[in-house]
Amino acid sequence: MAEIVPVDVAETTVSDVESEVNNAEAKVDVEVEKESEAEKVVADETQQVHEKEGEVDRLSAHNQSLGFLWEWNRAPSIPMELDERQRLELFLQSVSLEDNNDGWVWFNGRENDFSVASVKRWMRGSNNEAVTFGFKWSKWVPTKCNIFMWRAYLDRLPTKTALIKRRIMIENNICDWCESNEETIEHILTGCAFSMGVWTAITTWCKVPRSFVIHVKDLVEMQDYSGVSGNKKEVLHGVIIITCWRLWRARNDKVFSNKMPNVTDLVADIKSLGFLWYKYRFKQGIVDWDGWISFDVM
Ligand SMILES: [Zn+2]
Image (cartoon, rainbow, N blue to C red; front, side, top):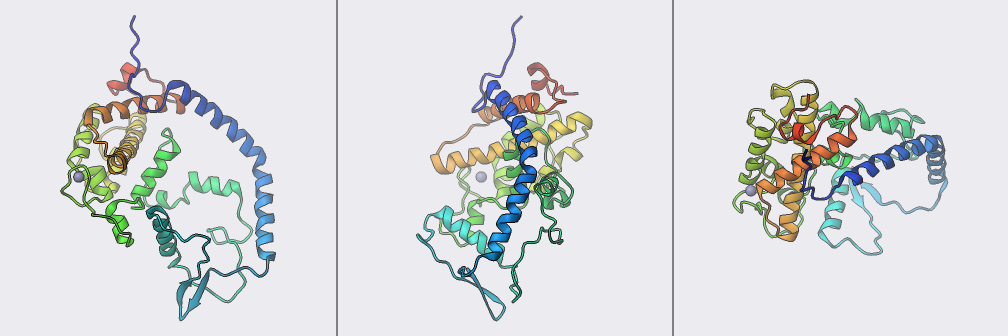
């Protein structure tokens, strides 16, 4: 009997995934052991920071506007560094300075309430900003894909249009795939003819209607309006995230390496990666390759 296995796995093999899972489990054990130790270290370091004197202030307040007093060994110069500095400055614009002593407060507003466990709870749970606004993490795709989708959802990805908004000098803001539209995250993930071709193949495979998708929000909610339920909904949610993550990687390949993608290869890659991740990372992920390619995942 011939066994059908995915032949075109771009970067991950079964043994990679197995060892990734084993490593992750081992790490969780070690992390739990070290948790209280880590909490103590954080508390000690916080104390040390408080006790240090003579530090240089990097922020100053004049007439309620913030000034930045950078002291660089080497000033940021490449686009990535400039982008990070711009993002930091934008982020800090909402900060207001007072004359009191500085202190650390975990963002639920209570002092001495920080712990590694509370960060984990926040990352998994209902206090998460993205969860509050409707983005749900997939249980079976790798963290890098969930984080990518979260950043896309919050429009925090360095598309050309986003870079220009942050006043970073780039040649133009035109999509490298179609060379005719503004490159926004919506365009890359939904609006470009190339991504539309990918979505047509993915929705056909998953046997769901080709929804009217304009915003990233429509993508992260697509499984809720696709008429599927139970495990299939869980799978579809992950497949949507993997597709978006893979589209962004293909976009980077074109922008940085001038590699033009094609729909067939990209969809094959999404199916293969999805199969491996679902099968090896999810305890309910019982499926064989035949079932997967016909989206028979009940
Ligand atoms: Zn385009």
